[in-house]
Amino acid sequence: MAELRFELVTPERQVLAADVHMVVVPGVEGEFGVMAGHAPFMTTLRDGDLAVYRTAGRHFIPRRRVTR
Image 1 (tube, rainbow, N blue to C red):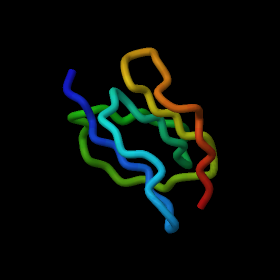
Image 2 (tube, helix red, strand yellow):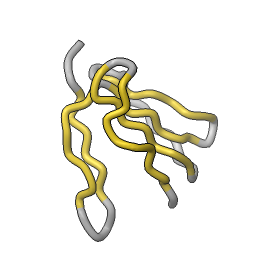
Image 3 (cartoon, one colour):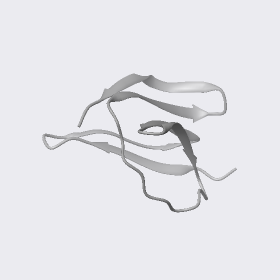
């Protein structure tokens, strides 16, 4: 499957920029995964852990805490 270009940015700096397999994000209705070619949608994020996978089944970076 094609790679997804992912950038994690805070107001202070860019934390990560990489081509990844999947990103799992905490949403108000539960966690959701985003892969290349994912249909566009809008949702509200909640505080929680962000997981970035370089390849299928492998963590690329340690889980990061996301806060609003």
